[in-house]
Length: 450
Ligand code: UDX
Image (tube, rainbow, N blue to C red; front, side):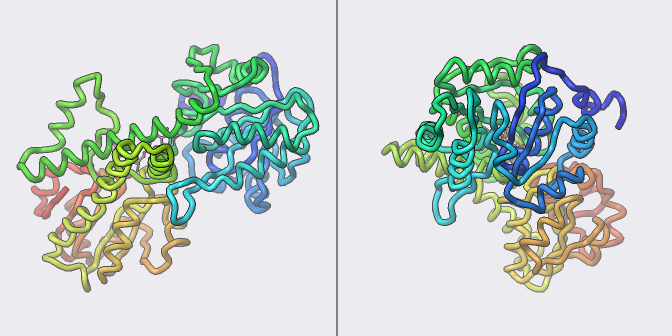
């Protein structure tokens, strides 16, 4: 690791003055990153998961997912003896503060989140934890969950001193550790001064560096995460709606985005037009908020979020249609090179990936689809073994009738049109992320559409 790299700087322990015993329940993406973050803050961490294989992997310093720089930090924490992994709730129960980081996926056939793992974690901890410890929910949940978990703890715990708090996370895949150690805000949903005190103690080095803390009630803390993600989703769908207006009127969306971005009330970020959002958070949180609004009888509010979702999904159809146009009207029998399987660059996460959705749709229209992604191919192969995969861009584009750039990895942005001209059958490229320089491709003789 370069000594001046962000990760090298982050890996220098921040050393809180008081080391706490921390447990993290659920060693998925969020839990593992949070556990490593806590260890880097100087705490004594035990991370627990029911999946034996995952715990075995993590215990031998291997990450079960891709996240830049995180593997090195895990190794460092292991060497310092600050982190260990277990499959036993009994091992986790000793800690002063427990973070519940289990998954809350969207329930099949419903807009609501599946809360069974959150409930199990609270029940199992409540049965074992003693003393003035607190159980802190970090998983993204619908409002009312924290209150229900507090009741569960009261019902299942013999010790009245065990408290509950909600402390949502805002970490982005690809910069997860940076977001964990340098968050732009900390939200504490608490009902007792003791819970606030413990949370302030565990995050002390971050707070001392000036990170703002919002201390609030359970419901507001629960809404903090979903509302941030729904807002980001709205921004993306807004610019994609403008992209459609631009297409219809002959205006250009990228310069339009620039004009909007100079207004600092609007800001430039999350105004990238293209294939739209995906991943494990934005779509799920948007739909959960929609379900929440509908449950409260707020139909206008629900329809706002429903529309944001619909505009986002319509981008995938538009991408497919533009690809079809480039192919002269049909995918059937054509060879299509799909660049990108991950829902965004710098991750191997393919959950609700717009890129993969378009690739699969082209396959269903009888194209011969070959996919390349720098890190997400194994995840994609597990879910879509019917598609072809290639190890390099050139191999994937060999004899293709159309290249579709659907996830904006740097290596795709840097592709050389002249080199690819020698591999493909027809020089057709669809840029689903507005990531390429159109002029460069036009001047190399390509039909370029974005
Ligand atoms: C998101 C939130 O940013 C984070 O705070 C939260 O904790 C978890 O959910 P993440 O899912 O990692 O993080 O992805 P993010 O970087 O927010 O991107 C979401 C999606 O929006 C991606 O599919 C991305 O490609 C898309 N996007 C982003 C656009 O389509 N246009 C943009 O301008 C920006």
